[in-house]
Length: 98
Image (tube, rainbow, N blue to C red; front, side):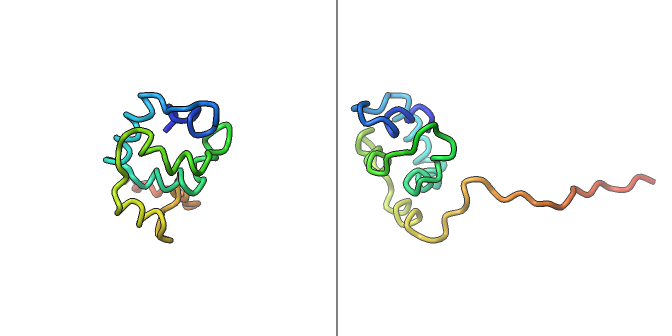
């Protein structure tokens, strides 16, 4: 989503660059959960400015692609996993050597 940053955070950028659209198509295919975090503001922690919610929602249309309805349902559910998995405080166990 990094190639989309200017489009998503700057209203003077009128169209997303080609690299953004190529990446978006890959994300839709391989990791649609990432789009949920873009729509809910979760990506803001990785970007210099906040993502414009309307721009993020319209990004697939601006790139000439379609967001599958399953992804929209997934994004609107309360079952979206965190953007970064929680870390455990437990130390890793190493096998004892004889």
